Length: 244
Figure 1 (cartoon, rainbow, N blue to C red):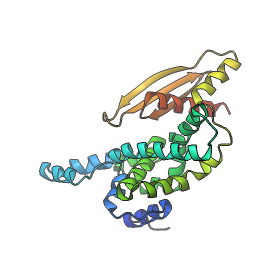
Figure 2: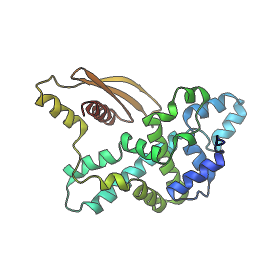
Figure 3: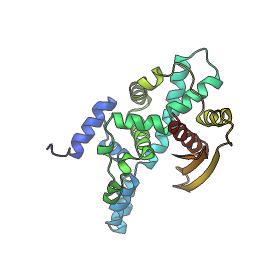
Figure 4: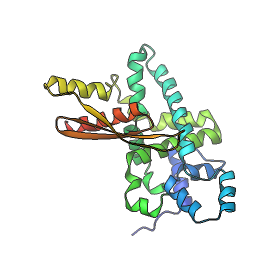
């Protein structure tokens, strides 16, 4: 049986995948730190040490995810304009929404074997948090944010165009918004319209977390995202996948 990889080995593996060597390795460490692990460490140290750690920028990956989300949105919009010069916003919007969705981000995270590199609290690890799509998606955005802060826009762009290449190539036609697709599916079968409900809202003000459920045709899907609209879209996509 192989021995578990050391943190250094995991960092090197992630760097090899993204094609970028960090000058400030602390940024990559932060990008791979789930809030449960940051909280667990802060609870084990005194107030003075905790304040010192905070001044050094240590903690969870939420701040890096915040900026990584914005960087991804910009770089993806730029790429779509280049790749589809004749398309207007009506077609580019759905393409963009799909490419920055939790589902695509989580797939990229799995492709780079990110779950094993995430630093999470022991009890969260036992609960399977490393396999949660929203946790994986946030970590990918945090890594992108870390690359941007460490090296600027060019290495961030190179990572996006490498990691998202298969997803963008697969878009022969603009994808249909999942909420629209779900509504068309039920109407075509004479069924009642989907019902969306807010399951929970939490997280800091700069990085809210919405959990939305949707029910239709006796089945239920659930989505998690930083906005109600995105969470509804993810919920609809998950429900539609049950009808395939």
